[in-house]
Image (cartoon, rainbow over all chains, first blue to last red; front, side, top):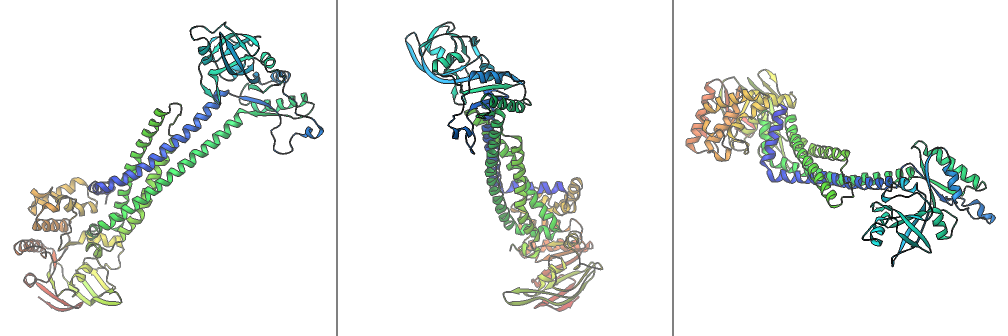
Length: 396
Length: 223
């Protein structure tokens, strides 16, 4: 029998058992669709998190005070010492290192913002002018030079305090100190726990005076390039160790390491979800096997007849395999369409989540459908081919 | 052409052994018209199935056109069935979802012929069997006589040397049965070996050679 005839004969028998075929195709389609949608969700979440990190800044090296280590702890503690604080001088020393594009010291606190009878507790970032490019924040109005008593406010604060006009140049009180608004942040929304629309950025000296502290919360350093990150990290650790009397009492982390970790975790999560979806495909495969076995039983006398008029066992086997192939192919294609439709619906419902199904998932979904379909039909096909023509003809 | 030597076929029913064919030897020459008669359970259908390669004997030797076919592989036996043997059954055994023309076309598809040649040969056979206006009908839409004509057309489209019929008129009334027998006999006249299994004495008598069976053995063979 020619391949073409095998394919068309098997298609013919599928078309003649419409309900049964539709059910298998549906089961297959749901399996493939589940793989596509779930991986789209997982990969969307991964991309969302990676995007969030990228919005924090690129090639970022961050210095935290204190040693984050589970073993040993702070060596000086036994001698009655406490870890040294990070200071503005530390930040300047780190900023002079080769490979640094820009750096920003960072203080974080809260204070009451008051103007024209309005009062609100706000989050304050104390830093310099380089904080904005490092954190990928932009101004919609005005400028920020980091000069004394100049502040930048978030877009929501600007709107709430000065609903009918230009906030630039307005005088406000922050705690017990007076400031002039020199810039307004453009709308950015939530970014890693901070709503940048509701923060106030003040020069770091003013922030330290406001909070009555000498210490820094963080030092943010942007390296010249990705390749410069690792040597810079070493150099920074070295410099800070020298400045702190040979004590390594700071932690230097890189954005890349955090990002890579999240990327790995979420990729693993996507794979796990895809695996769960693949199980549903395997279940669909078992359904195919059941239905094909029933088909063999129902068509026993037809198989017997084909044998009687001279069909070799191989032809019968190929007929049933071709049937499974058609069904899985249709199921895979329908599932692919369903999956992409579902991902589109998710993107429509949650525009911030880039729920695009990865190509590998679509390919793997369809391939798994084909393979399970064919594997599941191997047993029924072999059984059909083995049937004894005399007994098959009598329908036994 | 057909030479059976000491053919034995044993069936097991529970712990009982049934010898459907017991040491049967038989020669049938090319172009003969043979009837095999006997009561139910006499082994006549089993004999026909063995001749038609639908059943394998447990022992004995079967030569078809001078070559031992019991030693052939499954695929080779399928080829012999397709090319040398045509089978006609009591219950027609048409594929219900295929039209008359498609049923007749099946052996040509199995043989691997091109669609154009298939169509030509199917059309010719439909015409010869007076089925042209029924070509696109499914078996359910055909009368019993028409169904058996389609089955005979399917059995003979590859021009087999032997046509084996197992109670070909068993499901037909007398008049239609006679028509079907006339058709089979016409095919015999054009050179085909015709072997008919029946328990209808009148039908059996029309053959030129009468084989009688009982309890798995040939008890009569007269010309």
